Amino acid sequence: KQEVTQIPAALSVPEGENLVLNCSFTDSAIYNLQWFRQDPGKGLTSLLLIQSSQREQTSGRLNASLDKSSGRSTLYIAASQPGDSATYLCAVREGNQFYFGTGTSLTVIP
Amino acid sequence: KAGVTQTPRYLIKTRGQQVTLSCSPISGHRSVSWYQQTPGQGLQFLFEYFSETQRNKGNFPGRFSGRQFSNSRSEMNVSTLELGDSALYLCASREPDSPFSGNTIYFGEGSWLTVV
Image 1 (cartoon, chains in turn orange, green):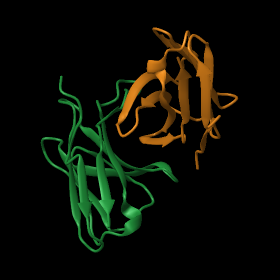
Image 2 (cartoon, chains in turn blue, red; image 1 turned 90 degrees about the horizontal axis):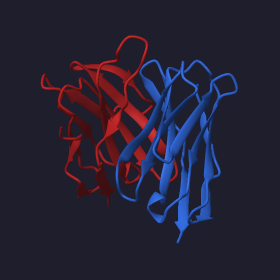
Image 3 (cartoon, chains in turn purple, orange; image 1 turned 60 degrees about the vertical axis):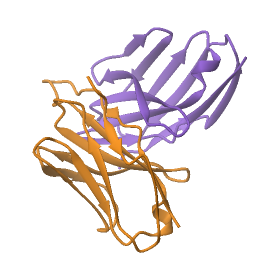
Image 4 (tube, chains in turn brown, yellow; image 1 turned 180 degrees about the horizontal axis):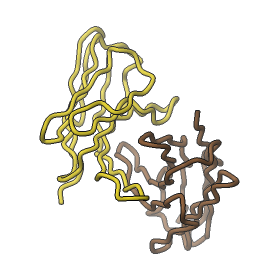
């Protein structure tokens, strides 16, 4: 069964710092990988989707990479802002099933 | 386009009661899936419906059930509620996949269920 791990569970950085969030998965036969953010008490907002054939995707200050062979993805956030404070989750898709990590709680300190 | 809409947003039920949650997917999305989110277990998959048929089911007891209507709206039902069913229930929808690539899944704001 696919297992998705996100380390660290929590991260606190000063405003303006560049940071990297990690996601690892055990089975490399994935269809795609998606990064989400979740604000307290809210649903998940999609950030980036990387197909299995792709290596990276970019949106604004966000860049996500995928290395299927090593079972890893990273989410790079440039010039972090207090508004980036949220929980970030990754999800891998196998067939029609999605497996989620437990998330990294990010706090950006003004 | 309107997003995924879930109702009700908050509800409190007593042990032993049953509850029905509703989800309206984004227009044109035929796949609807449900997840339970708790602080201890994270996001756990409940089931997925596509064109009114359950396509996948997670590892939850039979007290958890769902259905999808012809307009793609979906409901999930939990019978004989237990304290441990207190959670955020999230619904997600997506478009049919295009060849060789899967589409983004979109989540609703969730329904907060508290069982007392």
